[in-house]
Image (cartoon, rainbow, N blue to C red):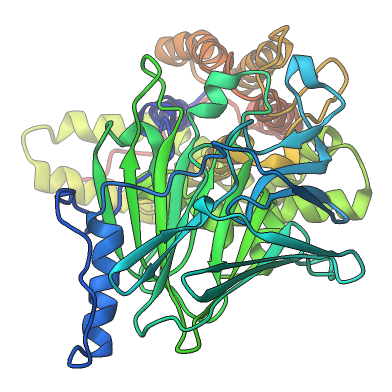
Length: 562
């Protein structure tokens, strides 16, 4: 096979090798987020001479400086627990603090060996989905110190809580929307009577999301806190990037903040008033594993003492999150600093796969097979032109080598003679490069699929023939071996009737072996797609090998140009 083809393969290999090394956790640090001194005291009570902006600044300083975070724990499980069942989930609420203490996703089954067949639980026992405290002037009120009275309305799919303290009535109401788009959402309405100007609510995120996967350690490595500034891109900070006790603060306005793992997330989304700040703090680790972290969002209360927000507790479903808007589908901004380049390809690939799934109603394994064939068919004309350009370059090689030898001492004359050969054969100096580019076109798709299989819930637990899960490695290593064999056969056919080339022959054996080793622990779906692509390319390779045979060996077409 011609050298340029192997050059393209080498570049592809470098990308595949570099991807897991450069982006192991697919997280990025927050620009402008700095450690903050946590020794400062709470805000002081505002007086009538203090402006609303000053009060808001004082409230924000609470979330920035307070070392006592509202930890989302259920230290004393409520005296009363209310249950709210929706079309997709089952929530449990505690009268101690008026907080959601559990959520079970009934349509997503746990894959933990001891819990197969049960719904996915996002909250670990004795933790909560959220907890709250109120900043009311100079006072800070922890709601989990209060006992609330619950009212459940099954018809309205809502749970309401009320409590009185220091002459103030505090109301928390949770409602499950009825429309299909907003399933997995809880609408939260909080009201505080006689709240002073500049009051705010501090919302503590869950410190972790319970793993429901067979490989718990791998799932925990994806734990991160993400948030969306009103201006700028989504920022995601992995738990492993936060040292124990390290504090980072991001100033608002912020439209949502979320805790996520590989497949699920708990997001808090503003519904009118954005969050003023987000505070992150690293928690002690279990050995080398960062299993928890603290996140707190500051939400200002309105002039009437109310605040509204949504809680999304559910899957990282690509289409659902896209429809919810606010870039919530970017909650897991993989590829780090290359996110802006990779994301468009990833979105296109996901939309294509989901459309094919809906249209054909086939298993995702067959969808990947069809997708691999379609990619090759779409690229067929470009690859055809590239390979024919390579064949023409092969036939010109003896003449070009003769020119280089004749004018070795005169580079200017050598360049002039080479340009004349290109012109006489309707080619250009860019022809060798253009011959390589179409061979590299499948690479961005392969690059995007690496992240798709690593983070997309649509492939979670999808079996196909002997493969128990397309998102995990092949337990029998059959697909990477098929991929390597198909690559070798494609290379072998491509070398037929080509001029002898020892380097190309060595690459014919080396590249399939190297790729097979690289892909051994990659997602079996990725291996399946790549193997199908190679097999789909065999007819084109065979046809061009026959075309090369009809042309015969390269010959000189005349005297060497001077």
